[in-house]
Length: 333
Image (cartoon, rainbow, N blue to C red; front, side):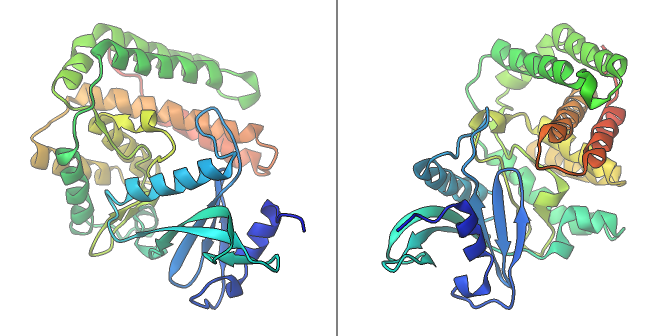
């Protein structure tokens, strides 16, 4: 009897009969790293057996560990959303079961489904955003940062990591196949690198003040749910290094994304709440540096989609990369 392959697992999990709650239907969403199966009340995430430079899901054990880490880390900002992990098992007759008694063939993250119409990006698109609606999530995030332990890090290592990130983005974004304006990207990156060099004391001070923490890693509007009990989901669970950030960096990233969607004021609300709760008021120049840093990084990620043979809408991602480059602003050195 052959072991079910990934296609068989996806097909099984796409059927309502696979789930104990007997949903009316199952909606399937595919990402680069996983499949998410949405039922009436729950979400189930299955990791793809892939390996990239920054992650490795190639074995069953690695996928199990990552599922457990995703639940642990995301409970920090979404207490009641992440319910646990479930095994996809093989019954004696050779059929698949969800959390059965048979041999585990794969693992899933089990989540409570959040209302799509209460996600921050959707509310921004509908023009239904108000400061009072945002405040509970901003407060939750600020309290998280206030309670986070400082990460021990050498100041020069922190600056080196930032500079290497800018240099990597410059190298990738100037590739001719991406169709971006190389002179524009070069001007932005050179200003970033000059800022790190000339204002080294500013970055060192952030480290020495204990501002560098293990944060979320991917703080975007689509990951923030504005229900009465707000939830901030989908942190970057697979890389601790990418979660080691200055809250100023994450808040600048969130502000960038809110501006891209047409509501830059939302980023200001989050920053003001953070400063009020923590007493930390990051300098404007630092916020501008991180905003541009994140814009170039998002442009690079968008451009990478053009190399993925499974991606068909290349013009969408080419335009997204251009958009981020246009949103990046040269930081004053």
